[in-house]
Length: 619
Image 1 (tube, rainbow, N blue to C red):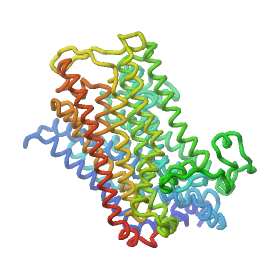
Image 2 (cartoon, rainbow, N blue to C red):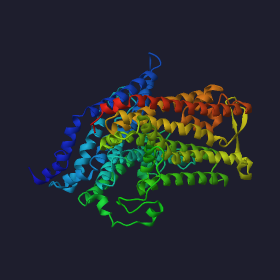
Image 3 (tube, rainbow, N blue to C red):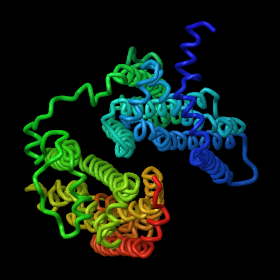
Image 4 (cartoon, one colour):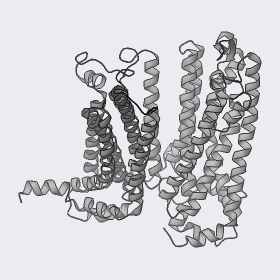
């Protein structure tokens, strides 16, 4: 065999690391379940789309082609969403396991080259994501039987999904090679992916609302930076048009005329850069060794009460009455970067809220822009806080079981209730400054409206039309928004933490606990959100009460009450009734979430010993 061909094969199909990962992971039932669930979701979506678009027994070829095109678009969007969700799951091992310095030390003793080490890890783990992706090809092929779906669109949709999966995989390998992260970085990786997608979609929507897209409402410069927007430009050319070929030149032509191609090439190019970066640092010990310095105490660590990095002694601290609660709250701030991440989120959130209100007060932003930005920012902040809460809670007990800390705690006089209540109190205490950010963000414009817009009453209220055409004056944001948001968000985050603790106690590992927690909370929140979203606008008086059961619907109702509480806010008196019903619903919602927390923690205390003994010795 020629030397060059053997070298190429060693980088890919015959790479020892890739072969080991594929063989070992292929035997795991969990991966088989994920693949089966993935195909089942796509199949059900396709079946539901067929039944929903077939109204009568007789359909013309035109209707059949339109139904096929709509069905293809739904499945394509769903596939990209599932790939963005599942790719980090398959790549999590690259961060959580290969980030272990001992694992890398063993690999570095082999005669494998630097490129073989990096590509072996990438291709071995990316194999399952790409296999998952192309396993759905027969479903996409079926849509062509209806007509209206060109083959080029199917290939382009797969290229967009493959580019997203490759970029996620390359980023995971780069984090692993840097050796600056550990198992807790898996969820941070998840949060970063979700934040990036949400932020680019919001920026694109804002640019189009300002008429800065192609033809005023089409693709923008951000479209090529997001897989969903790139796919939308491909599947919805009428409602989201791209620039006509030849309108631009160079980079502008690539991003504005063919956003899907730009996303695919950009994601693959960025993946190549990450692979090159990883190759250069893998045998240098990663960034941990490249950037290491002599132990000293910088001024910024002194300000936070921290000693030199790696120092084993620190000044004594006052412990709470519940040592478990104190440990959970204080251990999260054990390092400089954790403290910076927490308070940077708080500072940036507070500054952003002030800047938004100042821009509105100085007429830079219109009232619709203010409401859109407030909703986008608050929704994103609440989503991130919920993800952080679920991650920390899901790893709180399972992580201690894995490292043996739980066995030591059980030898102390700490009771199961004291242990679980301490976990809950400590995690919620740590999250309170983060929860204060969305509350402050929505409370500040409400207070601005309450004070008469600081001498500009025309900016404090808006005149809107009800569903019956009547005009009604409504605050730009309800003045009581901060109080109602606090009543709902704090118990909801406590609910997320409690569900995470339940899965953490009953799961063998941290990854399964995180996945289970996210699934349960998302399902419950999704059902409550859809019910609250529909009932709030369709049911008088009772609708606002039900809308308060979901954080998404209640936050939306606080910003746009006439739209969200339409049936109740028919006249000016109805708006006051809607606000009162919303406040009552917030109190009921808080009691419901706290009741669930109490019921779950009581059940866990009752079965604590049995559960701990059942999973004793697992890791």
